[in-house]
Amino acid sequence: MMSMSLSNDNTLSLARTFAYPMDVIFWKYIDQDALCRWWWPHGNTNIFHEFHPTEWGKWTFTMQSNGVDYPNEMIFKKIENNHLILEHTLPHFFLDISLEAISDNQTKMTWDMTWDSPEILARISEFLMEKNAENFDKLEEELKNF
Image 1 (cartoon, rainbow, N blue to C red):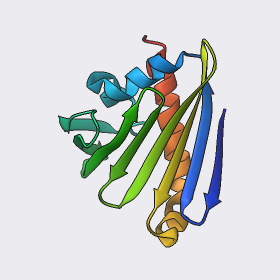
Image 2 (cartoon, helix red, strand yellow; image 1 turned 135 degrees about the vertical axis):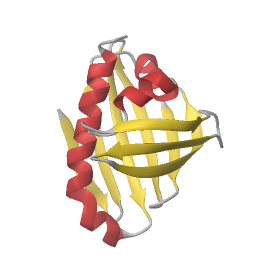
Image 3 (tube, rainbow, N blue to C red; image 1 turned 120 degrees about the vertical axis):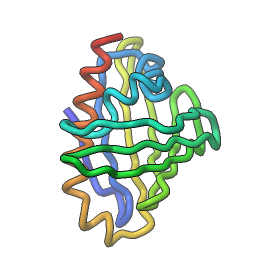
Image 4 (cartoon, rainbow, N blue to C red; image 1 turned 120 degrees about the horizontal axis):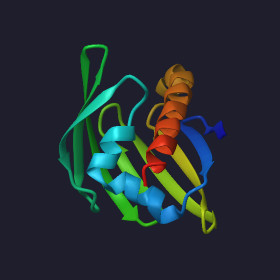
């Protein structure tokens, strides 16, 4: 089950606990093949153009949905075994991903999405909550393949 909240005017927080070790979940973020399978909502596909999961590394990809291409670019600002910070260039926001080991085989994952504009977040927060719940579901499915 995922918890969701608007923690302030420009930050959307999403959290879910997974029945997998923290290092397994972290690997699903830095392994290009795995990430390509679960990143983005149901019915969408990704084409990765560049993927360098190191600090200041670039990640460019195109999400395809209903015949429409959505180019994306992210920069890895921080990458540790329990914490990632990504900067999305357009629209501009930061995605702060924290992994907390609850036990050897249970990890709480939290996404804090901080937007430059509270107005943009207010317009799309329901969409983000719905689609990121799908992301988390797809990650759960991907973890079963470990």
